[in-house]
Length: 136
Image (cartoon, rainbow, N blue to C red; front, side, top):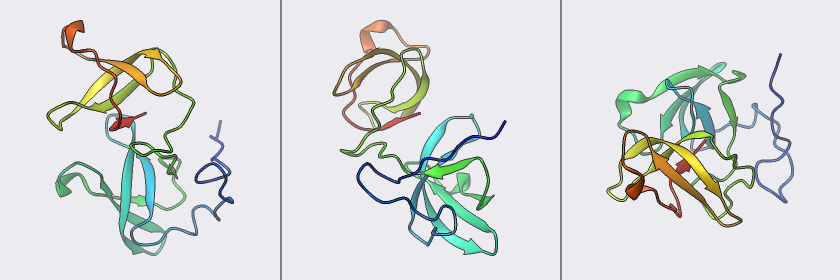
C-alpha cells in the first residue's frame, strides 16, 4: 500500500511538483531512524538523492535519501505557526523539552491550539503544552 503525498506544502499554497521541486535549503519532513516524522532541510542534491540535515540534531545524523522515497514528505509546518491540525491522541511524537532536548513523547490531550505531551520515562508532573518543537 503506498502512502498518498499531501497536495499542498502549506494551507493556501499551491501544490509543489513533489519531489522534483526540491532545492538546497528546502524544508521538508523525513521519517527518521526511530520511524518518526521529523523536520529536515535539504543540504545537497546529487542525481536522484538528497542529503538531509535533521533540524536540531548534529550533522552525524545527516542522511542521503532517494528524492522519491516514501520516507520524505512536504513540510506541514511542524514547529511553526502553521502546525498541522491533524494531531491524534495517543500518537507517539518527538517533542522539544524546556532544556532544548528532543524526547519521544505521547500526545495525551489535543486542543485547538496545541497538544499536551507526556515524555516517555518521565513522571506525569512533566507533562506540558509545548508551543513549538513537536514532530509527528
